[in-house]
Amino acid sequence: MKDIQNQEDLLLLVTNFYSKLLADNSISYIFTEVVKIKLEEHLPILVTFWSQAILGTGGYYNNLTQIHLDVSKKKYLSPELFKIWTNHFNTAVDEHFSGLNAEKIKTQALNLGTVLQIKIAQEPN
Image 1 (cartoon, rainbow, N blue to C red):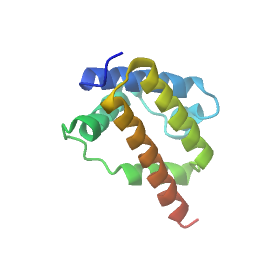
Image 2: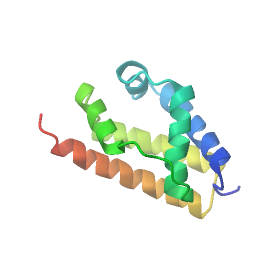
Image 3: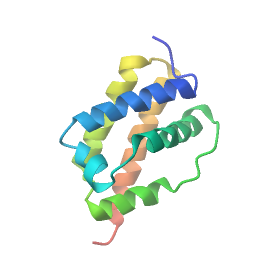
């Protein structure tokens, strides 16, 4: 199995990841009812984010923390949801990739989820 090497690999990863999220009723409502994402718009943004994080390409300028804080104000993003998210993410990585970047992206996803949970917990009710 090859490592994550380029944006095409990241597109495969995030496409597979979102198919898992959207098939899981315990979390899919966040994306279909709360945020109502449009995959054709959302996936390229995710590719840019992860490409910057893993491959150093740059180009992601959104405030990721604020985006998730805003979502959590609409519907609380609980630690359980982050656990589900992380499990699906790791599964998607492991199904397609192995190597340094594959491990790096899983670690960064865990770190990102942890930081977002801390920020959400610090928000006033």
